[in-house]
Image (cartoon, rainbow, N blue to C red):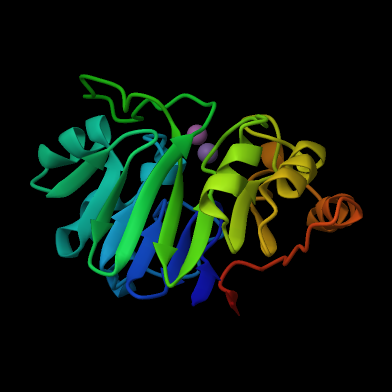
Length: 223
Ligand code: NI
Ligand code: MN
């Protein structure tokens, strides 16, 4: 499996299928690709905030959307077909299984015309050959131990930027609890308000026994 970071919380996973998570490209200062160049089978979204829902409507025209039930209902207004799931549940699409986990965070749509919010924010576990846990935006919570035990992820993608999510110290504890084979930091340095030293996160997480791989936007790692 290849995991490519497109900046912020957006990753493309190439496993049994090609999955983009939180496709925030337009307006993302660290994005390294154009929306029209993205070719994926599945679009997976953790919550409705603009820096995660992003270009979902555009990209999901040629892919299957998997997200919280309410987010899928919202996208349906724009003609997008999707599969709604909810926390604790999962769905199999193609050769990929996607499960939804808890995250502690809000999930309001940024659009001016919204009639409902995207319910609650979530994390996603994507099993497509290897297993990847994308924590979405969240605080630290001790059930990350449960997520580690239940899904045994090969890779954990964790926000470290602080202010809206965990910071580096909290994410280092999360990495210890989840026990993924590798942990990749995300959701930092996109803007000054979430400025964070990824090397400091790596040092703290590795002191706790985790293995951290720091990517630059546009870089990928093979696992
Ligand atoms: Ni958010
Ligand atoms: Mn965010």
